[in-house]
Figure 1: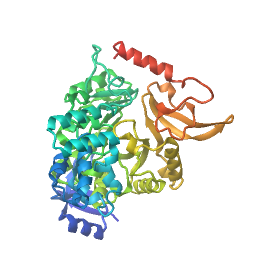
Figure 2: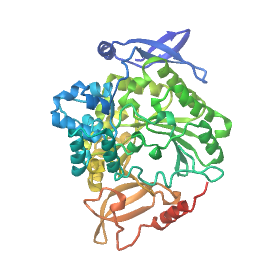
Figure 3: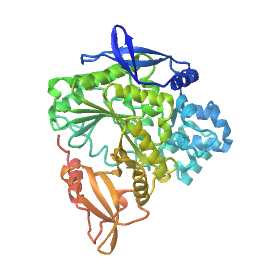
Figure 4: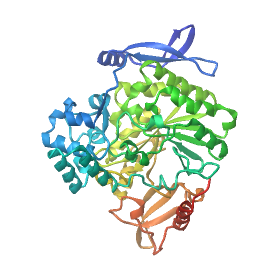
Length: 498
C-alpha cells in the first residue's frame, strides 16, 4: 500500500517504495529520502519524495578520450582507443558518469548495447575515412588539418535529412524564415530553444548530430520566447507544441518556464498539448530527483497539467536496460505524479536493439512502469547510417515478432516508421498482390494531411533501408505523393509562404 505522509501541514500521497528498494537506493548512492510539498493550481497539494544529495553530473567528451581520463576504457587496446578518437573527431561524443557506471556492462564491451549506443565505434566511419582520420592522429597532425578533414567527411553525411532546413522552417508575417522553429505537419510545431541544444549524453546514431559539432550554419535554435509565442498566435490550427533539441531538459527550469508558462493564457487555448522530447529519463534521471531545480521542474509540469494542457514527455528509449536502475524508476514515478504522460519512442538500430526479444521486453517494461509505447522508428538516412541501419524487411519482421509477444496495452506502438521528407511512412508488411511481391506502406503523418492513412505499395527490395530506395509497384512511375512534393520544393525555392 502507498504511504500517506504529513508535510508542512498538508497530507499527500507518497509513491509506494518497497523497503528493500529504498535500502538499495540509499546504500548505493548515499541518499536520504524526505518529502517536499509541490503546490499547484489544483486545490490539493502532492508530496513528491525527494532524494538528496544526488551524484554530481560529470561529463566525458573528446578531450577525455584524448587524455585517457575515462578509466573504464583501459580495458580496450591502444589501437581500439585510437579508432574511437578518430571517430569522435568527426561525429560528436558526450557521455556522463551515470551512463558509464550505471548503464554500460563493461564485461560485455565492446559488444554491450549501451556501449554501442554512447561510445564511438570504428564502423561508424567508412573504411577510407577512418583510415584518413587515424593516420592524421598517429602523425600528430596540427589540429587545423584534422578539423578540416573531419569537416570534409561530415559534409558527405547528410547533416539535415528530410528537408529540415529547406522545407520545414516556417516564416513570419513578412515572409522571412524563422530560426528555431519547424512546422512540417499542420497540427504540430517543433521549437528548438537555444539553451537546450546539447544532451546529457549523445547517442551514437543521433539524426541531429549536426546540432552538436559547433557549426552555427547547421544549428536550429532560437533564444526568443516571443518568436514561438507570436507564431502560435498566428496559427490557431496548431494544437501541439514539441519542445526539442538537443534535449530541452538540460536547461534550467526557469528558462523552460519562460517558454511554457505563457501558453496557459486564454489566447493559446487552441494549443492543447505540450510535448517535451527528452532522453533525460534514461541518461540523467537525477534531473527529476536531485535538488531544488528538480522540484521546480515537477511543479512546472503539474502547473501546466492543472492549467488544462496535456503534457507529454516524449521519452527516448533504445533498450530495456535504460529502465532498470533505481534512479530511472524513481524519476518515472515522480513525473507520473505530476499528471504528465510519458510516451516512449526510439529507432531500431543495428548493434543495439535489432532483436524482437529486446523490443518486447522494452515495451513490457514500459507498460509496467506506466509509460505508453509510442513509436518504433527506422534509423534515419544521416550520419553513421551505414553502421546502424537495418533493412526495411527485417525492421518489419522484428516489429511483428516483438508485437506478438506483448499484450494489447503494449500494442500502442506504431512502426516501423520512416521520418522521411514527405512524412512519417509506416511499413505495414510484405504481401504478394497480382503475382508481385510488394511492401505495403502508409502515411502516419504527411506534409499534406490528405496523405495520412492512404495505403500505397512499393516493389519488394530486401536490401532497401529507406523510402528513397524504394520504387513504385505495379509498373507505376511515381508514388502518388511525388508530384505534390516536387511542387512543395519548387514553392520553397521561389520564397515560400507563411
